Length: 302
Length: 251
Ligand SMILES: [Zn+2]
Image (tube, rainbow over all chains, first blue to last red; front, top):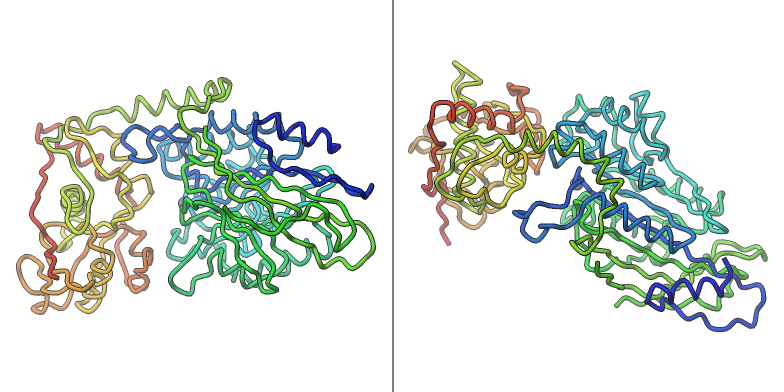
């Protein structure tokens, strides 16, 4: 995409996203990457019914699909991710065991999803059976998975190339003990997410030279106790740029910024639950020499 | 559809790369939470895909389960919805675990996902909305210290639904004056408790229950409640709603 096009696209949508400073360097190239994300959709295929309080009338898979399509029509580079708990919460799951949830995600062309505790509610067998309809993988690096089928469809990371931008996606999940009945998880074991995620993130950043490393997390945003949360994961690791979280159903007013172990900023986001919000990031990448960036701006939240 | 632009601009040098090659700097980041409300249009092809599933569910979910004379509302520490639900668990549990002693039933507050059930006809769909999770009903025998620990946890959470035979006073996030069938728990050493498997397995910080043996009915609580209400309906009885305060609050 050339820059003229890029500017035209953004102003056409009614919002001037950014006005790049005219460049005197010829080598500078800008690429826009749009990241769309959901978490804890919990089988909410229809909008919330009228008796749902603040959630009434919100959400719905057909609306989400339409919105995703509109964004795909406008933007050249789009990735779509989910942070777990696709399943459980409406009779759609109880009656059809997640068949429609995955069918719809496949239509929406999700690129990856991580495993939430409720995704085990139909057992490991049930999850595998439904994921057979999907061409996107489950991403997790901190579960030891003995179930053969689940092991096959779960990857520690996925690399997605979007134009000139290389994106590494890893995933972490919550302790299942006490959350999911033992017989459903088929001996899946939880390992420390910090210890599991660090080598994967470093591999993606250093070895694979990913331009952006995203961690899909179903750990939860924040806890009062010692439990590993997205905030703890962010401050205890390096090489992760963006954590897209879930599990605690936080409607974050805006994404949080947490310094990592090296003092570099990590963006953390979560978009409530039930599919009433969809998260969107528009990232602008500038191809330039190391240490030289004409369009780089200091972090601003507001 | 409202777009909220929240974050503009980020400064992130990818410092790791020491080569003279070009790198991709993350120059700016903007984010939005896109709210899917009634102004968002629904894709027709997707609607058509959902439609046959929805039709099946609507038929099942609209089946009636009797009449409610008053609206049931969820609340802490006491609520008519909580009392109603816990009493049904106890009644149904006595039928399921026949010949086993039972003292009371409780339900974790977070497991009930509806704020209210309107008066009038209760439908199968209401019970699915109230109890979407596949929790099963268990029976467990616990000692006095464990009961105290359990009720302290409930008290610290502001009070969970409990069935009629149990009462206590909530003071400074602790449970005091605990009584079962109007008798102080100091008189007894063990208690027979009906509870969701999620809690028995250590959920909601109930880790201290994990190692205790239990009888698992392997029946979903949701299905138990639906069956119980169906039976009452067949007999022309409406389900009793008891409004006595089982938890007293002392400042
Ligand atoms: Zn969830």
